[in-house]
Image (cartoon, rainbow, N blue to C red):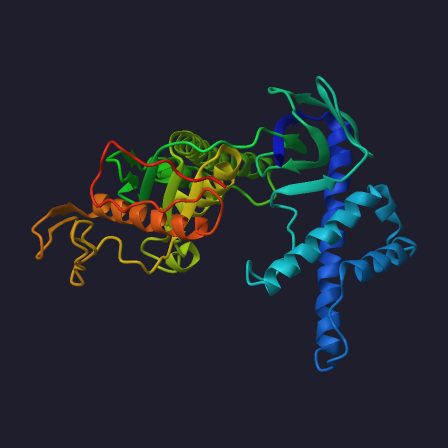
Length: 396
């Protein structure tokens, strides 16, 4: 199986290379923002004409060529031509995602935010350097061996002033083999996840643990004079702490998802509407900190890589209210009630444990329907309680 895998390395450019990278960042940012305005103006001018459609990547690429020939924008030639074209491709992808209702309307890029430039060709990676067009060989820490065939390079700069190179490679890996083990996962805030086999994964609460330090750094920044060197240093200290929290969260999610796909052949998770849940301002910070959306994304692609069937359960399924033994639905169950007794069969339930078992059963049924009609597929019996015998998951 051929997959796309990224390898990220830390860069240490010298002063001259930092200036050259600043040129690449600034020019690609200008092109992105300029043609975002052009597409907006074109739409406003022709929105009542049914024969006129919006500008495409091809249209903006032709306009870019003409723009570089003008006296006012001759300086665009300082940047790599393909990097500027990639900025137009990124803008076109942002519009496509917006029209597909997968993202919000494209925003203008800001020079104070994270910066990046994309190279589709003409880059090289050696033992201790990364070569980028119009920049040269940049010192890099190659802390892990790069695999496969390099396809593109992205150089980024964080708000704290750190530089990174991300090389996307085409890697051939062995076809994943089916494995035993099934599990349902109930995600939450008190505990990050409760598994149907009884395991509980605690919520690390990275942001909450750093809130006092972040508040102190934010106060220090607000007291500095705007434009002063002290303010710049305070801004970097604050940005570094935010990056630390983000890195801690990402490290936790990567380790957790990899452990799950290595252990279980079938994983059931809820298809949560995270964007809708973030509208609850009382829980928005805690939901953002826990990273449910990124957890689901990683689980899906790692399941495809390493042979785990990841089945999403409908978000409207009452997993917490349904008894996993008799199927009774306790419609009066409140969110504050963490344990309850089934009025029908008398079984005592832990709210999250019961939900995880129901999610596993629902996911198994969905997997069986997906496998129906395929060669080698067989129906899998439902189980109400945890047992040590788990039928083999079908990974096709």
